[in-house]
Length: 252
Image 1 (cartoon, rainbow, N blue to C red):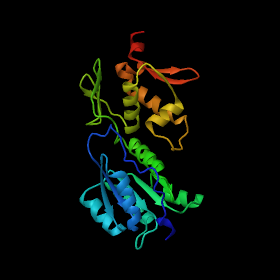
Image 2: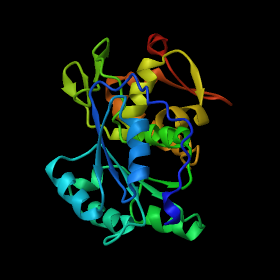
Image 3: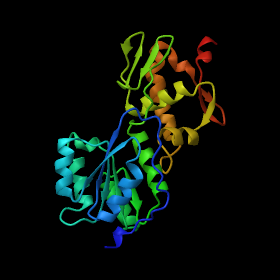
Image 4: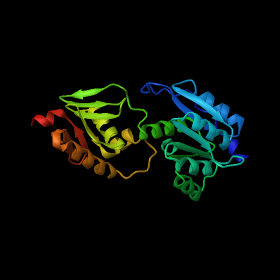
């Protein structure tokens, strides 16, 4: 098949030091050579790499032990990767697992079809491992799985990445995953102004096509959540630049 061609460049292992525990990555690919290449490139790292040769085996493995991310070949015998994506995205539990489709189908309509089916990203064969590595990390960041594990606290405001909770004086805040990631980035990068593009790249990852103004919507939501406690004042709008997070601003 034409899809078994993939460049073997950049096979150095992933080195994402922020991962605290082994992340389970499932490769679903009928070509042994491609599976071997991917496993070689990704397994000497924080990833626990598993393999499935078709959709049927993948479903059994996913139900037995849910992975953190799936690398899924589109063209496979039996159920295609696209159909498997649709099946997983209809399941209440498995729909949360990020999926990256690997395929030689490079037409725009194919990309749209893959993303509409629920795939989180779409990588065209042949690909470089460097590009794939970058996309894996971007997808994992967006899913909130690469947030550092140390608890952050300042004058009653406490963010715990392990439990994915934010509290103020011990009282929990109801906060969505995107607002959580923004607050985490702000609290770990205080007193510096960031443009909208920089925030999108750091929080959503590169190679993600999202309007820069999307960040404004989430900033407004985060401010609204923090307003009753007064911590919204720590999020400053920097004219012509973007945003800055500073606890010093609360004392002004």
